[in-house]
Length: 285
Image 1 (cartoon, rainbow, N blue to C red):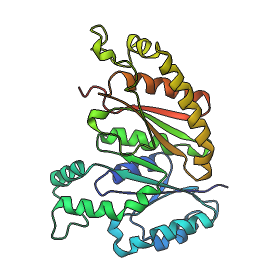
Image 2 (cartoon, rainbow, N blue to C red):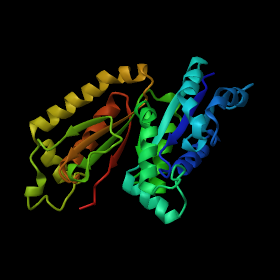
Image 3 (cartoon, rainbow, N blue to C red):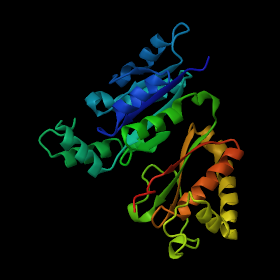
Image 4 (cartoon, rainbow, N blue to C red):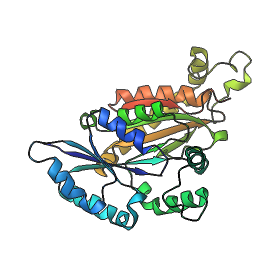
């Protein structure tokens, strides 16, 4: 029997409570604020005999010095044969400061500093863990319902799927998504913005989609990029990475990137990748 363990971690204020409630709703047994040194013992107790097969452990900087043992504990779980994944919740400094100011709660690392200094200190402490995470979700522009859907999409019935991909459109003028694993620039394509008939439409509209896909280089890009994902899929799985975020950007995230994201998603589905599509900046103009 395969037993899955997901570690829920990340920046304080980035949505851990919402994420863990979503996991509970899709059948995960959640243990919050567990000292890392007790992880393997706890998982063993919860899964014996014929117990839970999906365990979510929550660990973060609230654990103080005990948090330093986290990587060793994760390695121990993998050595024991558990299917271990790490979900890292991220948000911009500005977003985290605003959330803490509105809640009027102190940051766990704040001490005598201001909130921003505490957030930056935490980001430094979590740098290595973030870099080795399987799935990073940036909650800066997500409401609680969006975050719940993202978690449910990733972890509801995950054992049946080899690779899960989020294909995201975005606008470069709003910044590159911090949680993207692969980024591609769609600004090489003619811009529908300069057409009076298309300017007010989006990449979800048929006329804009036809305009974008009417150029041979767009179709060629989609074919080659889908092939590229197919090539790296085996490597991702081999390295224990089952979630990938593919970000396609154009100037404003309204026309080209939206149409190309929808069409890339369709191609990935055909090669067996489970896909969800997110248009980060659509409607922002």
